[in-house]
Image (cartoon, rainbow, N blue to C red; front, top):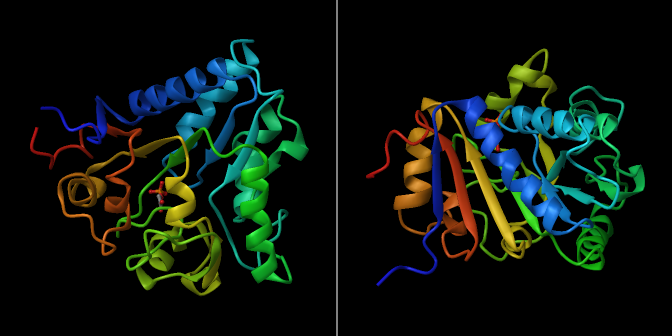
Length: 249
Ligand code: PGA
């Protein structure tokens, strides 16, 4: 008997091939539905994916005019003009180079004054758009997805969270010093992410091999937030050989 909830695991040769494969899945979703709602991620991993999507749009193969996007997270305190804000990242990597309507792009507002009401409103906007068709995810070295750090609940919603030392340390490479990394963020919850119709988690490089193995083959345990995705019926891992090197396959 096959396990109907077993994730699909795609192993590509290297990071460029994995980016291409992830871009293919997003392309497929956009071709199936001109008004697709995409959940987007930041970080080093999806940069190659966005490069592919920009190229495809420039060559007329992809049309973002009907697409709506919701990003996973944002640092508290950073506005769109801050070079390390996730809004800035998304403009640079994707939005400024494709024919998406600015009003259809959503990144949590790191400068929201009333965060408690703001996060409820963010969830309402996702629902109003019809829910997320495809959610792209990366994975942190500690198993975090978005900024859902170890210990996050499976039914957690969009909220403000404190970042762990591990994440501050990992992300300090983008700031002049670790002191400048914000200590808190707004993040979609794991419950929010699990409501997406399809989830694509991309990971590349040897440093992710152990956490990927735990996410796929380990127990469903909030200690590794990515393992909480295991029950999702439409879950795809796109890995390169290095990130897949610990798997029992
Ligand atoms: P990375 O980050 O893509 O820069 O490795 C992933 C994450 O922290 O979710």
